[in-house]
Image (cartoon, rainbow, N blue to C red; front, side):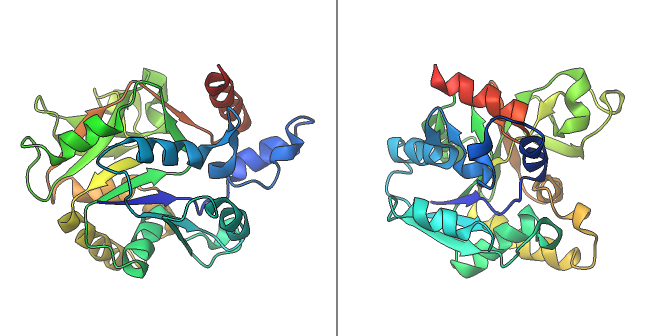
Length: 263
């Protein structure tokens, strides 16, 4: 099993908030995965979880960065000899490849043909999240061969338009994925954070997806949920519920997350 952390985003919403704030000036220019959360870089909290989990201890960790933030990650990764970086080659938000293309880049560059955990570099889960239990579920008999296990957490009615929403059956298998639907368009309230466990066969679908969408606008292939939607009818996908998550996409969300982990 390998691990991929997506860290090539440009954090434009957070950057705007910081420009308009007289506080938190020390955060300006920092990539979101390196933001201090309770005094520790967000991405380092994932490293601690990976190292504490018996199934992922010692596994290779790949991080996709961009040209603008690579030096920050070069310095950070000196403390983590198992971490390997690759840049997507972009220098600004307008050039970004999108999350799915970054996954494809990592799979090609590092020649990944193993099961893969994909982690959004701007996301943390609540304290009761168990990585070990999720890996056990992924490796367990309930999972069909060639399947995917994704996290899901309950959102409020008014939040469906902010997230990708999974519809699932009574067995916890995903039956469809809706990108930011109106609350009247689905009865599901399961949002799908960017934390996935892909079996090796599913990784082969990434290049197929990218080839089929090579001429599509970025909005059709940027968010990782676009690939989740593509996988649902093509391979078994099951859900692993989590109680909640922090997404440090803007300053208020960052402050909330930082305050929680300072306790």
